[in-house]
Image (cartoon, rainbow, N blue to C red):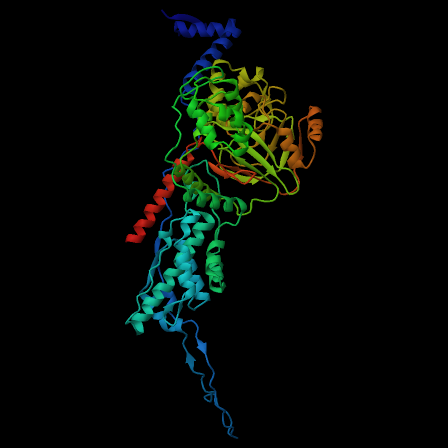
Length: 629
């Protein structure tokens, strides 16, 4: 039944629900406000289900495309060898006329110029950069590099032989094969065509090799949105000029590879692994084995055998008595616990004596084939980085969960780190360290606001106010979190800034080290110290949590830990500029040389090896198609 209200001299009919709302607004505004707040929360709770910020994704890799490049523009004679043969001109008293001229010197064509017409209908199917470089080089240097007197030179033969051995650099020699010209019985234009074809194909093969060596065969940014690595520009014309001038062709082929110490170590490890026979007697420890001190297991004999086989000589020497006395018993005795702890420490695992998945993986090791694959992938990835990493640098290897600072005449500083969860993977990129911030604010990323805070705000609009966060407008005006339309924020119709105040509960702890980048990744302290005791440390939202952040801050600043502590103890939020050029590499390698020079192997925590292997397979397929077309 409708309610009738007086409005001035008019009668107004109002439905019961509307009438109740009207009475609340007139006589109980507080109840009306609470009702509106409940309705808004219900509306936000419904909408929050659909509001999500997606993480970067893996892409369907597309290999570099090859194209047909015509060499016709090189067929025109642009230069020639001129041999003057000028006869003296008789002098006369007759006035000279414009028609009088000196005798023309005869033009003698070079061997390359003579063969040029063969290029008119010739083309190469190559990478675009290679095609452009071949055209540019021969336009500037119109002469043979690989042919003399109609035959391949000794340099050409030596380079072909070296290119056939490029598998030692984790490349595919088939990508650089050039058939020797068949010249027997040929003469004239037919001989010119055969030798010119060989000349151009040799140069294209060499330049393809140089390009692969210096920038890699795979463009990492096409693998996933987690990769942010500028592809190197390679001066291929200069590279071919170098091959033309060099005396030792084998040396030139080797020098096209990265000359860094870490690449050399990887190359040596690849050779060592390939020289070894695949282990026929690989020790197997039953999957699912989990063993604590004092317990028994039939796998105990395999555990001891694995340590005896894969432990270092120092470890085996230190525990020789235990290894010699072991009689195959199933009991996990105190002596064997100490042996396992020593092995865990050597393997950079938590030395707790508990035998689980990670310890077993370290004990049994990987097959030679698996190690070879990891080294080959590491060599490809290393080509994505600058050849020289820098004298002072911070190198983070996500797969190893470590960060290492190195500088000349300083002891290396290495520590455990926590990296992004598999759902919040840390990006692969490099940058320059610029700022150390003491008692930092934590600027909450938009993705965390939407994906993690929005559900809490739907149930409790004042959550951020009570939890130690500051909410401000883009203009800097502070507002209550309950006053914000968070769905409008999630749908990017409204913008706010959220940051957590400095303090003991701040997610960044006491210090952070900034290298501003579009991924909002940096190194920082953390209140969650217990995570550093774990072997697998992928727990963050993508940033790098440091086990000893004060030491790292002191290292990049060139100060002491006491200095850093004194800046923190003031309690003020302050920043300090880092002087000097200190690059930071936020990398991902499942095989990498340790500080002692030995190559270590790590678990592929993000499955990135699999994605890189797929990219290489697609690259190989594209090149095979070109070779057989």
